[in-house]
Amino acid sequence: MTADLGIDSLDDKQFADEVNRLNKEVANGMDNYVRLPEKDGFVILRFLPKLKNKPFFVACRVHRLGVYPNSKTVFCTRKLTPTPRGPKWIPTQQDHDCPICVKYNALWEQTKKMTNMNEIEKVKTLARSIKPAERYYYNVIVRQQLNTKTKTLETNVGPKIYSCPKQVHEIVMQSITGSEVSGRRKLGDIANTVTGRDFRLVKQIKGGAYPDYGQSSFEDVSPLGTEEQVKSWVTSYHDLEAIPIMLGIDEIRKILANFLDGDAEKAEGVNAAAPAASKSATSKVESKVDDDLDGVLDSDWDTALKNIGVQ
Ligand SMILES: [Zn+2]
Image (cartoon, rainbow, N blue to C red; front, side):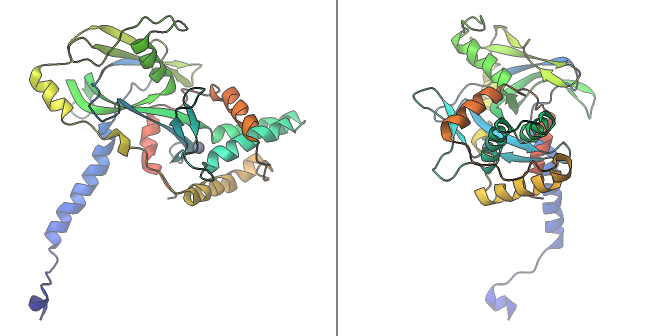
């Protein structure tokens, strides 16, 4: 009778293979990302050329709630959008704002109405713990890296995804265009296959805690690779646009509520609902706070990518 209905039996061997494959994918997932030195050090990268109809990089913001490895990573629903006053992170639709950004701004507004310094500091600490941080994703080749499994030095590894903090993204952009502010000279198309340049990403731990990348810069002009290498690399880019996994507004609200509940003991009373900030005040607060903790998130942030979502 089953034969008549075209029903097949399950081959457990086949599913064992599938389970293995899935396990491998999880393990290999992080191998897709550029690994940075744990402490002070550098890595040489080559930014891969922009492809037609594909972005050179993808910009997004993330909220990391809590402390790694128990943190939860939530992609911000605000998008970098061109405005008459330059690109701004704004909600994509009315009434569709990121609940964590709304809370973050409300906390800063709340501190303005407070007088007790201790209490103000507590609210500020809570605000910082849900602060949005900008991330930029690029396709790159790692010119040289130590394979931690085989202990051998590998060259030209990739394409890999470089998860780039705002500080490095600025250096890259200013190097392309030149910048009077930073004094960087104009290098033009740093990703050109012939006249482009490798990038020396220098990491220094400042104050014993925060990574600083300010010493990073582009090297002399050099070709990307041989014709075969270039061909193989440009046909195997990572889909950068698929990286930010957007949760629904309700789901984000739930994650935020859980985080604030869990944190309530430490933050005593700061979770009382704060009045929503007016629009102009909000943007002012944000620009003031924006450069507060930039660059704090580091490579291990990517490890936290697997913590996306409620569980
Ligand atoms: Zn947000």
